[in-house]
Structure formats: structure tokens, C-alpha cells
Amino acid sequence: MDRLLRLGGGMPGLGQGPPTDAPAVDTAEQVYISSLALLKMLKHGRAGVPMEVMGLMLGEFVDDYTVRVIDVFAMPQSGTGVSVEAVDPVFQAKMLDMLKQTGRPEMVVGWYHSHPGFGCWLSGVDINTQQSFEALSERAVAVVVDPIQSVKGKVVIDAFRLINANMMVLGHEPRQTTSNLGHLNKPSIQ
Image (cartoon, rainbow, N blue to C red; front, side, top):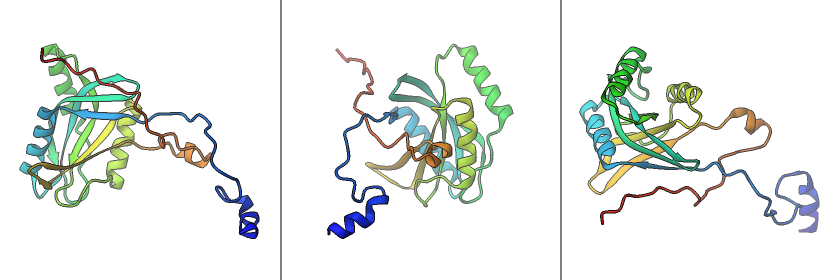
């Protein structure tokens, strides 16, 4: 065993003893999706089957650790298989203008799309779409919902954000820790 530890001296984790409790940057976040937004995502996704559909998520960044999705609106296009077409910037601009005119305080916090029958993950096209959202807001979130695999009582859904490749090259992965510091002030019913 001693020889193995000496041989592994140059490899991370081998021959170095237990990990230290050094402070790490905590960028983990909680994404809260309202019932209304979730129902609209599922309804939109089911209406598009067998094609993928997409839309924008409206909400707020509550604090450094919490994203709240309050509502969504569907985008007028569908995909063909594992990827949706790009966001229609003209339609998106019109919808955002209409939101401003109605006085709604929400902002775009990300986008959602469906993967009907094939689970929650980001394809290459999805990654490019998410990069464009993160260029506008580094906290933008991508949500994927599977309307086929979702059944009563169990929604198949996941949220994603990209990891900066430059940080990975340097050996840092800023999103590896979790936090219970994020909080959402829930309104009281009393």
C-alpha cells in the first residue's frame, strides 16, 4: 500500500492525505418553478409531441442563490428531433415589449424546451442556445422537460447552466459545491 501511495504522489487524490476543509466558492443555486409555469411548460410540450418546443421563462433572481420562475411563454417554433430551432429574436422582442406595456415586473431568467420521450439533457444545439442566453445574463437557466416520461405525480424535468471551459482548464469547477444559504421568502397564507 505504501508503494501505491508513493507511486500515486503525482496524481490528484493519491498519496496526498485527506482533503482539506479549505473554503470553496459556492455558486450553487436553487431554481423554484411556480405551478403555473410548470403546467404551461408541460401543456406546451405535450401539444408539440412528437416535436420539441421551446419558450422563455420569466421571473426573478431572488438572491445570489435563488432563481424563481413565475411564468413562461411559448415561442412559435418547434424542432425536429433532439434540438429546437434558434430563438426567434423578433417574436421575443415583441413579447418583451408587451410585458413592459402591461407593467409586469418579471424579467427573462432563462428558457425551457421539451425532449419528448428522451429525457433531460442538453444537445449541442441546446448548449449553443444556452451560451447565447448566458451572454445576456450569466445566471440564465436552461430547463428541459420530458412531457412523455412525465406522468401524474412525477414530472421529468431538470435545470442546467454551462460551466466556463476556461475554469475547467485551470482545474477549477465553480459549481461543485452546494449551499443552503439561498432562500426564498414564501408568502404567508395567514
